[in-house]
Length: 262
Length: 254
Image (cartoon, rainbow over all chains, first blue to last red; front, top):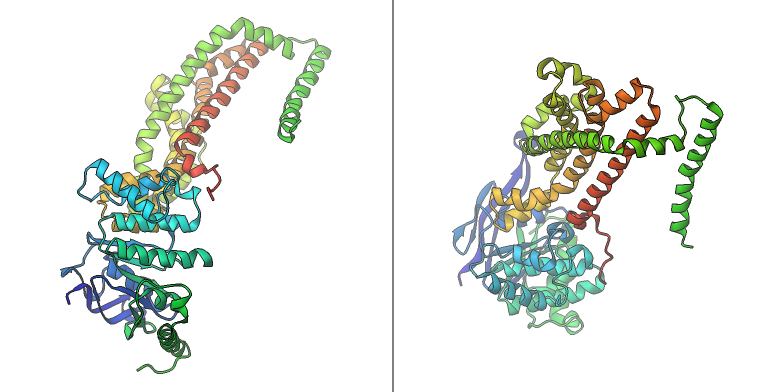
């Protein structure tokens, strides 16, 4: 199985000498095509820094990130990031449709083809009829769906999701979890979800990578042996779900209480 | 009657009251140096062709100075905001210039540029430069870092990022600077004409005063305020139209 995204001994620190602050140290991971992988860790473990390194937005201090076998030095084509702060990541002077089209600037299609594709993807995220609205005219959940649509539209193979649902309300959140899973399947997206919500991490993923405290690295891999599609009621009551959730939660709680790690 | 209309009407009552008091005071005075509103209206009727002509000259000069400031100061401000080191070095200088009243440079400009049109345009451009430079500088160095990340992750080149993301997101602040600059160009164009008299509405005011034609001077002032109100309303409308996304008066759809 060839990896779509992989890292070898990635490290990241800020400052130098006495002020040297290590954030990531010796991080190894490998994501295969078609997977949905969650990254969870204790608060402040450097999840966002890690995601920026994976996305090519931040250069690691040591080690390498590879996407499709190519060394990542800048954001590669085929990799899209969905940020937590949707209200700032969308352009307020562009309509929802134009925001999605803006993500397609590097896509090799004619104007009308791009437009048709953008309309199709907006429909897939449930925003038919909101193409001409501006992001600030629609709710938070809808804004994040525009951002997801923009990510997918950019000929994406891999979606890096940085706590995409942290700022939306609880009910919208459950709907968006199912929507994301559905989109991943429909548009053949491999997904890496960074979250601090253990329930969400387990519910959405085939595989959960548990990150250790700072300087962080992957300390445990938990396979979520549950079929897709998931169901908000049945999946969350499944013994396999409960077992995986217990394992991840126990690990993170252990770290929070400062216990030694395996 | 709606509450807002009532308040608007009350707002008109205040100037109306002042005009009535003014008329009463003028009738009690009986001196040509204190004309009442009636005399001013007559003066407006008698002098409006001259006033409009002179005001036109002034507005043309103010626009020229403002235009010079726009094409030089907005790019300079953006450049200083982007190139942090240069911006930091020049920040104290900008702060000093910002507190210097523009008419203070008139004698200096006269020394080098004489008293002609160019001298006035230089002074007006200087007055307009300060708010334009400060606001463009502030706008370009406080661009939201999230947008830079978005630009990078959408594979935009540096030039595209500047044109498609940095420029539009800086526009509201630059527009505010432009509004302040327009107000100060008008102000300084009149002031400079009063000091370097050749023509223009400032000169007209000065001449009226020298000839004890206070009524004609007040007529000129009335036209200046009217021009100010019209220009302001025009600028405000343009801002609302182009920066509608910044003012966001629409309610969310849900």
